[in-house]
Length: 368
Image 1 (cartoon, helix red, strand yellow):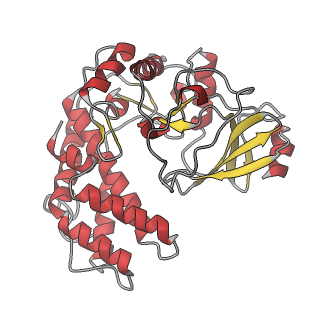
Image 2 (image 1 turned 180 degrees about the vertical axis):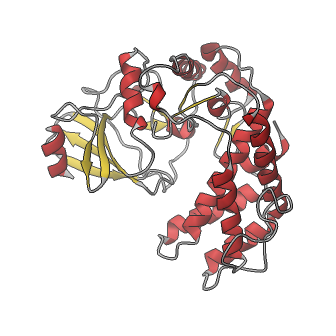
């Protein structure tokens, strides 16, 4: 890594510290100190180049709060190493908003930041390169059916899995063949949550079909702007509870190379042209059990964003798809016997909570 940074970016790294990076198995992230400057370095094969093209373009348009990539010695936004993108950004914050108590001013700054992103013309040269929301949940419905089939010990989608064969996954008799205690735990949670899974898959399928026939304003959306991707600069970050072990330690950053902003929005890999509800779902109720947002916080957000007049059908659709996506990704981690034990245990705790109705899955099934 040190050699790559020096050869590609001209950065001489004095310290390279791995940073826990949530559930993105396709990415590795480091905090790098080079003299008195600090950088976030990401090596990823996931997402798309939009995660670098768009922040660079937003910086050109004067949108604050989005860290622009550091260019390579050749002027590129990233280099290619080992078949993955290697990118560098200034280290802009010490704490995630999910781990602190945001002030009203910080909530308003977050709202203003997202408002500026949503007003970028969709016909902008970079925006035109983004994927376009089509309201087709086929991939996540297939993934849900596949998990159900594996837990039932079958080789393909179970009878009744997905929206066509009876309204939801048919959770079967037991765990996948050869599964350990964590797989058994997943199978039990999947079986106990069958009704909730059925409601989510039905909602995603029905609303997806309905929304495909309904026109909507498309804006540049981050698509993952929960509070875990909102960072605060060192001088404003007061940690109110310890970070989960999965995330790693709180790290003190230098300031000589970090631009100024009240809040920062990071991780743009999945940016998309979509109706604004694709982002607003993260502030209208938020992610219960992880990053909930109450009415008071929403009011502070609206002071910067403007009135949030969200379409209930779109909110419900995006919540259902997101909940199913999270569940199937954690299930896939659990079903991988080569995975880290601690990571798999964490995944099981999330799945159990979600399927017990304590998280976004419960909100997605009962509220628009």
